[in-house]
Image 1 (cartoon, rainbow over the protein chains, first blue to last red):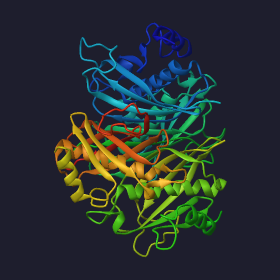
Image 2: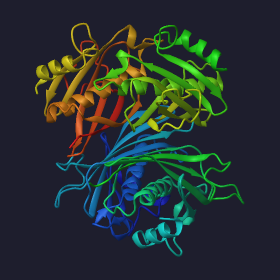
Image 3: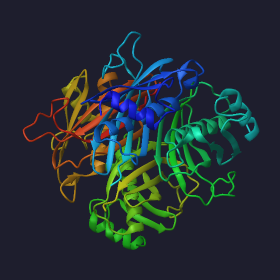
Image 4: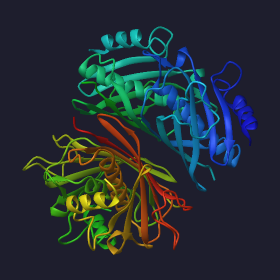
Length: 146
Length: 146
Length: 146
Length: 146
């Protein structure tokens, strides 16, 4: 699946998260993995105008799922078995980018790495690695049904 | 803080999560820790009527925060530094209970353990440990400002 | 397997770790899980006479493996897929106890929780929970071959 | 510190791990981080001639410590607060390379990422990223004394 196909698939499967007026968007699918953005608004913020932890976790979780979809196509029964995140820097309100890549794609288990970053104003959310430092780093494990 | 005080504090601080018509509730504060419930509805569900991963992560995150509040009082600047969860069994739609306890409360760092379980129909969400098996198990780390 | 059978099996399988003059020992197998001890000597210590991190990780890893063995018998191909530990308090030189229990035993995946504690002088390493506070807490995941 | 200085420091501090006839070696210190090797022999192997989990954890732990040393100089009181590893592929006996980099270096907390890989025969252990796939991926957190 390319970025448009993946976005369309996610609009259909997760209408709460993707689609018109919804905050998530697929911006990149290539050999390095998948890029997603969260346009953080009121509901995603904590006092101090920083993006809430659960919003960051939700973005990382869906980015990891998207990179598996991009690699092996729709596997609606794939389930997250573990999720681990380190929060490194507080992201400001605005656009948050998740870059997900597969560290392992086995028959039964997939392991994904996700970096979250806030692009500089005017920066390019489509770039795999910006000059921005990471806001958070997550590792997730999926069980793939046989 | 007891359960009512803690609930009132969380209604004021997280009106999206706690309060009338909101899904989270403090049900227990005692020497063993803190119990919270999530009444999972449409917005928290995934196909198959199971509670979504991010909803479970959000519940665990807030339960860990609540047990720190209960122990040391309001520390609005405490920040989650890491969050790690294993998903063990799919919870059905309905009530999900989070039991949080402190494994370490240091000067700079607090480490919390959170078990999530779905009480049997008619079961007691106020019990610390029900006969239910765990749906998920999380460990979170907080940095406490000096 | 009971404690003696499990110990004998581990002496045969891991002669570097279990057996005469070796530091690990099975001290408990019951419905709550498995208890192992490490008698920490020179090779396990760091400056300050505290047990080294890798020694604690090795003890937790083998305790998690032991609780799977105790539950389903010898599965020599079971492999650790992930291991996560929080260090909570520095243990003194001497005896370190690992209490391991299964949080999930599925067909393909087992998830174990391990608590490490240093029993008080004269304390009982055979007790499941001592009055001691945890030195470390680990969660490990195993893939079970089909 | 450069690679030789760092190696010399570790020989003095961890004589069990570094030095003549010892299996660990610093092979790289640069802007990208630190590279360490483990020359796995009998004591590090499991049946099937694969490197044991605890040996891989020990290598990752020491590589994370080394990258902090390289960045801020000797901080003998820095302590690991958490360690998390995913095992991705079984490494063969022989040379194992750990590439460690800092994801965050704060005043109180450092977060490191470590990739473990087995270089192809004749491959270059000094390269930051080989063509090899990762055998394991670890994230560790250190508390830095104030």
